[in-house]
Length: 214
Ligand code: GRF
Figure 1: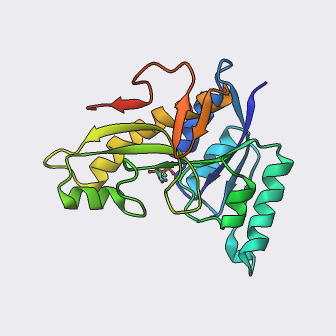
Figure 2: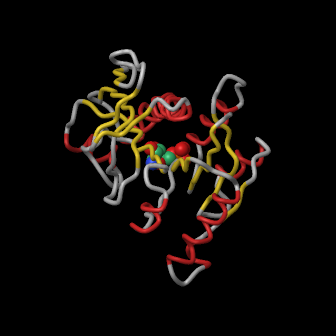
């Protein structure tokens, strides 16, 4: 049985597209049941529509208190039978209560090698700092921002003439590769969490440590 996913977005949705593409393969062990955006008129919603996936907008602006906003999300993902919530550029933080309810059932993709460069504008910050490597991380979502056990990372170099945009695109390429990989492992029931660390059954030594020059 395929793992049911809810994907949450706020914008472009290129990671959503990578997940749509992965889930369209018969051999991929997960299916997207619902896409939720907290913003209207975003490209990601178009992608969901084009793929024939149920999609809706739930904006916190529609609700005066966060609980109500989160209750709505909770109801929608529960009704969709989602077993895993995949944040894919979802630019809003959840309350501790929501994260507790979906404990270790929410994952996120972040464009840095966590725990370095949490937060926003991370590509620009890495370029400005003169860092020589960056990358992306898929991790379980815990209460603190951009924290939680790490499932997979891909590293890319930061080249001398890189702008934040060039680096962003280089990292995105890797994001589209590693997000489906992490979901596959979870769907195959191979991922377990031990303290702050993730162990993946049957994984080859460096399968979740990708160093890619492209
Ligand atoms: C990605 O860089 C992701 O890592 C971050 O937000 C961006 C979303 O891009 N969380 P997209 O909407 O998937 O194209």
